[in-house]
Length: 407
Image (cartoon, rainbow, N blue to C red; front, top):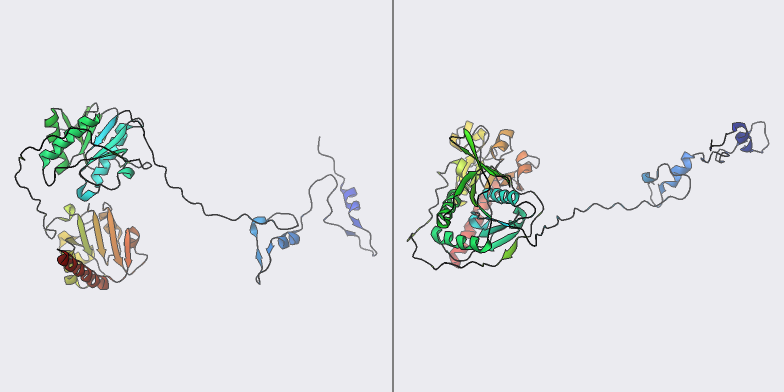
């Protein structure tokens, strides 16, 4: 054995302190012969951990178990900083998958993001996703776009002119596939382009993959599958959004030949927005709801009218008869799919939170900082809603007056 045999009696005799008196004394700090392990002195170790210069005794607990001696300065703890995700750049994609989003108001809708996510799954690692937009659009790189092609012209509502420009852009890009949202505008545009290019259109796809597309048929009793076609529309809420690192979203020049402006088939077209007060909650884009924290419902109705929002309410107000039953928001009322939800004086019961789970943006006003609706909101105002509503009306009136003077 490499370990020496210990002699406890010899070690004890070596630690004897020669002193007068009948009682023997021993040096407890003496290193035992051959053991290589010092005897601990807890008091000395504790004293070595003490941080000097303070009235109150403070100790550096990171040096627990160190032998007696000078304390070793602990390394300063730095808070880990989350690094920004690295942007993925595809210099030379093997092929392109084009996406034509609706992008109302210059921003991607939830359905548009799903279509770009489907294109990303179809492109894989070797392909690239190019988004064709009518003007500026936000958040394309985060949504998964490698390239962006901005189409000029076709001002106003001219679906035929827009379809002709997209056909020219697809020919110039040489895109292998083109995806559209199966929406009111996107579906109409896809069918116009399919007729113009004389190609088949695979509509309402619910599964998009490199192996093939799948859609329901015959009242959803059967499924139809097809190899990835060139033109297809994607059903809403069927494909997940792109959740990877941001992409480059590099701007591309328009290389197609723009067709000459033909006499429009539509002489005049105007979009007439629906009255927000009569729009069903399930179809509303902007909903303002009143909760039990509101007592002045007349001011609440003024706020909803000035914001051009659809009024809603919590179950408490509907049960009390203060608001109509069709205005109830929640699992037992109407489940919303609105772009923005503005909650005034609503604490956020579980059933109510289920009703607003599909809303993209939530703004909440409540006096309780720890209310569930405050935690759910992207923008929270911890204040009495009764005081916020008049202030909001004043700001809206000032904004309207400023716009009137500018015009």
